[in-house]
Structure formats: C-alpha cells, structure tokens
Length: 112
Image (tube, rainbow, N blue to C red):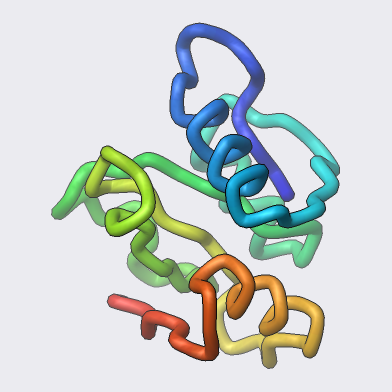
C-alpha cells in the first residue's frame, strides 16, 4: 500500500488502518506519500495501491492509467477511493484483497 503519512494533516490514514483492523486484513505499507499526484505516479509504475481523498469533478485521473473504487460506504468522506493501475489485469491476491475488503465477491465497479 502507498498511504499518507501518520500526521494530523492526513486523518483518513487512521480511518483506513482502523477499517483494516476491523476486517482483520493484513497489509504492508511500501511507502508513504503526502502528495496525491506522486502517489498516483507510483501506482501507474506498478509499485502498489494507494488511497486518496479527492474532490468530485476534479480531473485528477483523466487521461491517466488509473482506475478508482469508491469507499464512501466504509468511510465518512464520500471522496475516498482505492486507486489501481488502469488496464492491468487484477492478480488473484489483489482480487482476494478486494473481496475481503468488501466482505464478499461484491466488488464495486470502477466509476471512471
């Protein structure tokens, strides 16, 4: 995972980790980044999956090799989503991660 730093400026980091604890998901933070543009570049490079808080209507992901999955049914903010590499086949372990996160084979489709 590519997550924001554990600082007061990024309160949703704690919410993400609490969600993982509730779901009993094991995870590994490969790096921390406080910059969504840099985090999305790392995702496009195939280095991991990132979580981002983005404003609706902002063209952050237009013309990029990125997909997003909304997490608004898990977390308070309705702008938080999972970012993954667009057009790349999801591996078995990535699919298993999404299934565990969503409590079943119900994986919400990308909204981009």
